Length: 138
Image (cartoon, one colour):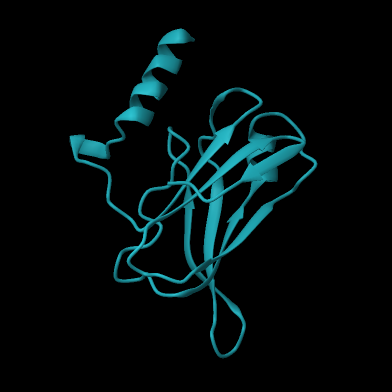
């Protein structure tokens, strides 16, 4: 068990994609930590949406899953980044079901605004079966 945690800490400090290449730089990133276990939330399904300027409807931009480090690299490419309102939908119920637990929150939605396309945005989620916390990270 301690070897697995050491490996996860090393991945956290030096994240790499397959083949030893550096992780794709994305202007929007997320990181989900399972605070109940003290480990990254691996395999959590998430969806990224953007609110339409004119029709005020959510459009799904990407569906993905967190990696072994609880991260989801490459949510947006720099070309896709534009000012507006975005939403990250985290399927917490699906994650906790896979862990053999129930959850008070079936999903978590984090809605945020991007006003400067040149900045990077990091939206972490700290998760347990009965609580969650999010913030704008660095």
